[in-house]
Length: 117
Image 1 (spheres, helix red, strand yellow):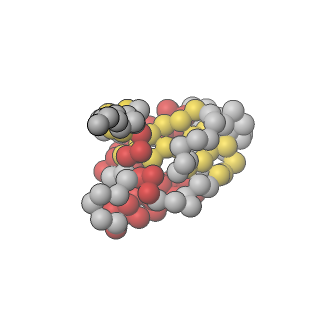
Image 2 (spheres, one colour):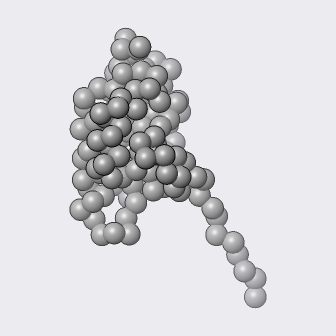
Image 3 (spheres, one colour):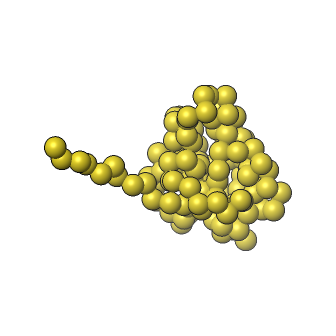
């Protein structure tokens, strides 16, 4: 009998609570060089990325302290915040075993090109 190892998921840190979790357990938000900001449900978009836990507390803390803007080094459109809150609500409404990557169809891109700090 051969024993196969399960492939390990990379660990990422939530920008709000600073907890390290497996990549698939976190929401990824990306910013391209052009300033386009997107919620990256597939976790494959190019550009600078930041991770958030799928908890309302982390989203609220990131929004209050402007952590996402600082991590991505560009302004975050209101549309992206609504998409993040919607994705967290979807995960919360599912059973306890779901992860952020289970929420599909949440890729949205907003142009924030001229809104750099």
